[in-house]
Length: 240
Image 1 (cartoon, rainbow, N blue to C red):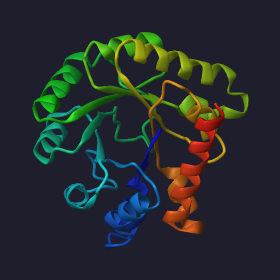
Image 2 (cartoon, rainbow, N blue to C red):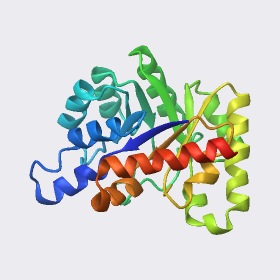
Image 3 (cartoon, helix red, strand yellow):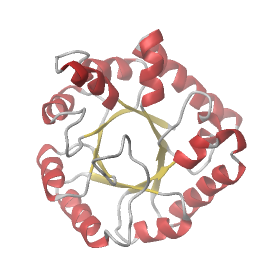
Image 4 (cartoon, one colour):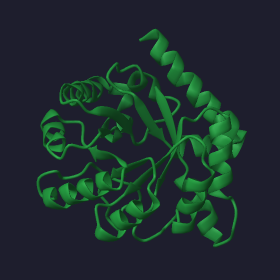
């Protein structure tokens, strides 16, 4: 299973003082050296953490791959088409939210999503849609013909100690996505304590994890934090 490390909050810390440290690019390099399979960043419309220049520098530095999360707006899709990351993940975005609170509305925002996927594909970029873990939503997302879907794991993460039904909905959504011929990713709110059951789901091939790893890195350093998460995921896959 691939582990992508989201480094947004290295930039959050930097932007708190509007200075030049910590440098997200250095964090990305250390994460790669510790076993990350890719680096994820979310270029938000309000530029609250990751900046345009960060993305440009990451694309010139990262030796694995960059997964660029973005809203399906003309501005953001245009930036992605110009910079051409390995993968672009379309996510919903609201200015007042602290973090992404749910998946894309594949009904209401359908025309906008379809246009974004078409433009990204034309630029040679692998596409993914961040969606809620519901089979009907998976089918709606599949109609846009992305390469992958990323299942929102927030409900599971918030209730993981009583995770039965929430883990089951992830399992069902992942199976539906596989039947539709899509690659299946997952992320949001995953931690060292709750990641193993999700990592053990057979139909998943990629996890995106950020806040928990960077929080641990404050205490242990980014290398040790990534290695520990990598080990927990690998153990879960072996014992599944």
